[in-house]
Length: 196
Image (tube, rainbow, N blue to C red; front, side, top):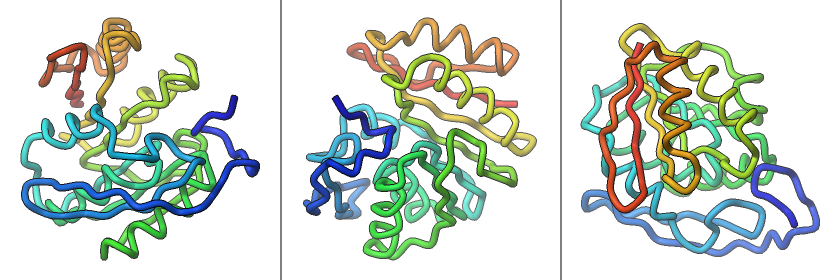
């Protein structure tokens, strides 16, 4: 079975388009079989986007594990943020480039295994983690996020109870020295806000 966090050239790359509305603004995203949630913006992503509090205009945003780019594009456009997006999957990176251009958003788009290819620091980092990649990968992403935040920066992550939200909370508290707030908890979905 193929996964969205690996490069699999055997998958169908025919584009399909999905619509998404965020606070009255319409977005359209191209997807295909090589990325996560190819038929719609997934429920957890929608929760994350609608739970993040209003943020400072013109800050630096990193969408890590960006997939086809939805989270970063929506937030960057809505809040006028300087956007960087990264994913390990080259097909996802190509789609993100396409979707940024299609939606009129400027982004520094990087193919990177976790934070390996990313430089600089950010005011906001967002993540819908690749749970099926395993805890070693997701925990590396949490640790990398802490090291890439500016002073006063915030890391937002969405996860599900069935995907280990409680152990995620424990790990985030370890990494961020107990500066973790649960800002959403409903029907098995959690959004954590981690700060320096």
